[in-house]
Image (spheres, rainbow, N blue to C red):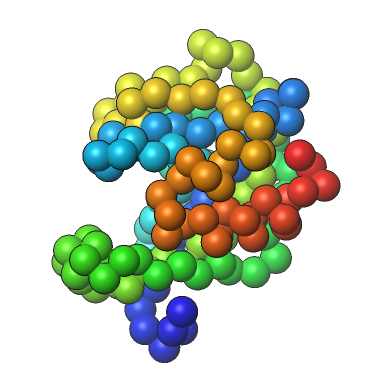
Length: 156
């Protein structure tokens, strides 16, 4: 990681249900259909928390009223994109992302979730055990997921 290079400000969202299972969506835009937790960019003049709540609605249909903020990461976490992606994503402006992660407890029911949103990112979703995450996400994000699981371990 090179912090002198440009990283896109981003939020990650870990949503857990009453069984301490984690919400994951299967990515539409990757041929291997990896799974991941919701995440997305922070708009200018938007706080990280507001971005997380907005991204939750945009990617999962889950509204703020069905989420209880439980924790957030102490620091920003950085990851580099593979070179071929860095050249094409966001017109090559960023070499990776810096992420602030939030942990929410899901207070709703199945009817409060809808991944078939206006601009869908996931083909489907499921609730998984924490052991599912690392081996089933895109490989370049695995170190970040490992750090997030460690940081939020007391809640899982």
